[in-house]
Image (cartoon, rainbow, N blue to C red; front, side):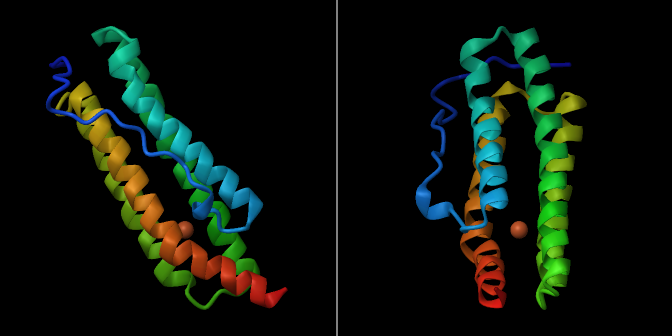
Length: 150
Ligand SMILES: [Fe+2]
């Protein structure tokens, strides 16, 4: 695997911080969203805290975790939608599936050495920016629907 050391001028190493305004009001979902934030933000610490070899190993562990955790999180959300007979279930699930596919592609690229440690910040930004947009639109819509049913 070819690994290129981080050039700090190339990559912005700024974590995207969780804000209270990202809460949907559904406790379990909010907790899971925050966990994704924490783990995705740990990606940008890898360049600072690890050597190259250890950094790649740690990055693979975090990417694997994110992969699995995001799948579980989406599945929990989808179960909730089914439970409440949510009319937007299909569209919402489609968004989830597209995102999972992107993360999996990144995972494969990274493991095949196409990606390097420098790209971890990009993955961090991609995951969290997508999640913030998704929470702001689709997850909030879902949360509102569930509140209206109660
Ligand atoms: Fe969602």
